[in-house]
Image (cartoon, rainbow, N blue to C red; front, side):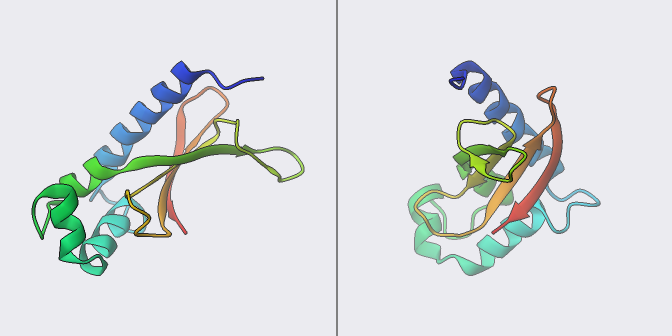
Length: 118
């Protein structure tokens, strides 16, 4: 069955809202918070200048840059299905990192988990 573009847009929007909401909260030290702090120290100032207009962006500016890299799911045989809507991977533009923030959705379309993955 083809993917509903409205559902992709809905999930993308609520995923980005959740990512921003959990940044720097208790229990997120190894998720969004780590993603931001790692990239602020590891990526060159020229990248940040080109994307945010400053060599040392605020965490919110980093989160505003996140773009959807892919959405996918796994069937019972553990094969990835790129048409599914179970997992949404967000990353920084320009291929500067192998890391993503992965937002997992449950069967009802609600966010079940947010984590940093490589």
